[in-house]
Length: 606
View (tube, rainbow, N blue to C red):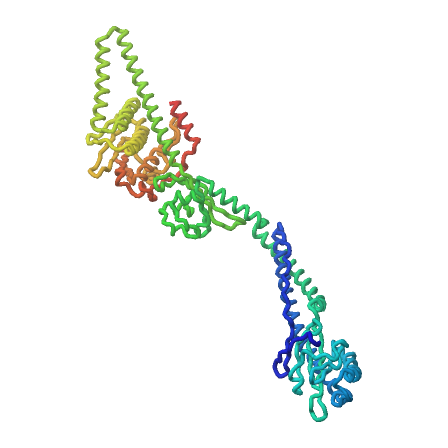
């Protein structure tokens, strides 16, 4: 107590001094990183334990702080009461008020110390205080638990005690924090003849923890049990909602899904029951021209053509293929609804670009038409050669010459008639071939008197070959079994460059009930026959060409079927030719790759 304490700092009426020495904070050790649990229940349980441990630590810290405050308040009062009792002791007061002769030397201090020490030790033993110290007004210690402190000055003393008032303070005594009560010893006249200091040591941190350990253990155990039970229940509920998958499995599935969707050339688009986009891959964005922020938006807010929006919303029958012409591309759209436990979850639509396949089918169709034409010409030439051979065998040489000359003039007139009106070589060759095919079938084939068409660009020539070839083939098929059948073709070009193709026949015409459907692929007014392959393709291809160029197709009946096609020049095409979605749409199944060899085999068999 002597020479090892600091001056207390008064507080309030009964000042309490703090003489705690500053202590160095010790850095806490960092525990090893907690390993991750493989299951969701384990992760939740570990998280619960961390929370419980943090809460218990915080509660323990608060509890220790409250315990210290309570100790300071309660033990301070006890120490003050003990100090007042000691200071009121008559023997002590008399000894301090009337010291023996020679009290200023060391021997008198020793004699006084024996009497005062007895009073102090009795009070400490009875009260259970940590120490009881008695000092003179000049701070010289007369009685202390440590005999070595006797005769030395008291380093810490409350100024209030020297002024005749009791006080409590916090001081550090022998390396331990203590709450100390100071009470003056008063003589009969009221003079201060000494000071009594009574103190109680604060319990150490470990002692406080040990005292609170039973309660903390109970609380920790209850919280851990509740946390474990709650974690298991929560994990079971979450796993039911995630179909029994663990978080790691869900993350792996999401990564695999993103990789799979990103690796598909086909487009994939998913919608919820309210037709809001929930998933879309890069292929679907490219094919439909969707914005980057389309996920979460309604189909009607994406600026899609009505036909495309209707197809994505489920207008056609589920699972059926619908072919849409979007931005000059033929897209096969297949929509499948998704349901679970009888509840509709939405739909998934796949988009396949079949433009290249349709172009290949168009080329194969042209090749088959050429094969049919060559076959017809071969048959016709064989008959003519047989006639010439017979005339030679009959030695009718002049008649053979006249026959050959007549054939040459007929062929020359046909070629001159076509090439004079149609400047495009590919289209002229097609018309000449169709004329030969019509002649073989017994159908009158002619160009309308007003036919006049100049030479166009390569793309226009290819489109006209597709349109004219398919329309003439359909007309020949329609009139072939009828007597007096004829097919007429009219080709013309307007001043603005728009090309008009009109094909008339003397067949039965279009049935009224199919007038709005014959442009769809797979719809035909004829019955399937061997060697002709799939029906209902010609007009659908014509419609696709018109949609790509922004043209129109008109159907009518006037003594037979009348089909009029208008193709604007490429420079004046609709936005479909410039990359915007076209209005053209035709429904039905698009040919798969398996159709290509079948068409080729059909052409070869012909």
